[in-house]
Length: 482
Image (tube, rainbow, N blue to C red):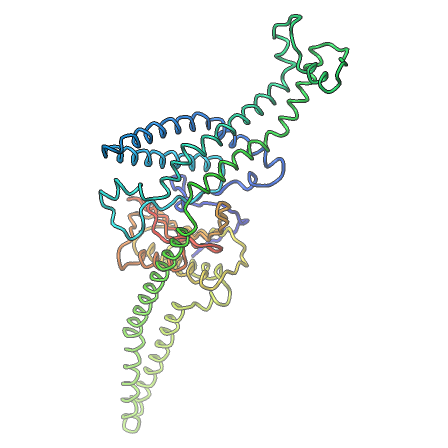
């Protein structure tokens, strides 16, 4: 028995209770904050200011600490102790670099993939941990970024930000606070200086405070109008420098991609091999035994056909039932390979069929278009994930109700779309992936699709297991436990 709730598709719907965090580790940014145009720039101003205003203290502390430690180390290299101090400086530079990446992330900038600090395939020995940074180019780039590049960019960006913020706010509010400034005959009015520069020998016959207020208002409006461009531009400069110096090199990204593809291929082969072995076992234990029995019944009926026609008719009827049962079992096995409903009507109909056959009442929560069709391998993977999870819940959870949630989730940061399928039950909890069992096999199947499995199943329940499959890009497969 199942009930279906179909809602308008969303990009970040999460059916889990408030205790559940996003197992993917991806924060879906508010689409309104990413729209273009002038208003979009203004929406980013608070986050940009939150990044730019603390920049000066951060870069000053960074250059002070790094310069002190690094030059102390280089001055003492002759006595060998300095080598370890230089390594310490490199580790500190790595820390400041990671702080910069975190600050940029908080400012709403796209995530920058950090470098792989430990070369793949090499043992992590104490000597490599201590002296490894000396031969790792990323550490030296982080040091250059913290001691020179980020300090220069930070001072310039902070200065321009302060000028624009104070100039705009002070200019538009000068008429309010300017009247409290002390005045005497020696006062120099800024608007007089500008007018005299633009029109030498001419002065405006107006109240000095009124003229100054109007001039400050114009300047303040100009600065306030251009403030979003300044904050956005300065943050973008920091992002550009960080991407070039603090991010992973393209060669490393390609190495990771090759490693991920190899792991996914291995997982897919392993899952397929396990499925074939299970199919072989099921055929041996089921249809093959029935066919042997059918052959024996037909042989016995053939022997009795002339001597005992009544018994022969009984054996033939029995054989017909055996043939019918064998056919039904073969059909069931074939549905386990590629369910006909999945081929004919798509994933949504397949999930509705699974929910209807479940021994525990299932409530469907579909936040996608009912007519949605996806690539066959994606639909097949999602269908079998739902089937496995519903079967596990029926066998082990002792639940009285299950929610099956399906949604598409857009991740603007890396321009990917994910299919999220959650099976949430109100049972006893305690689900863990065990070698050669259902959840581990499901994880291997998802890895073959570059997806991942997330599990949240505390003792006492509830259990929420999610299958996440990328539709437009790739991601490493893993099991996330919470």
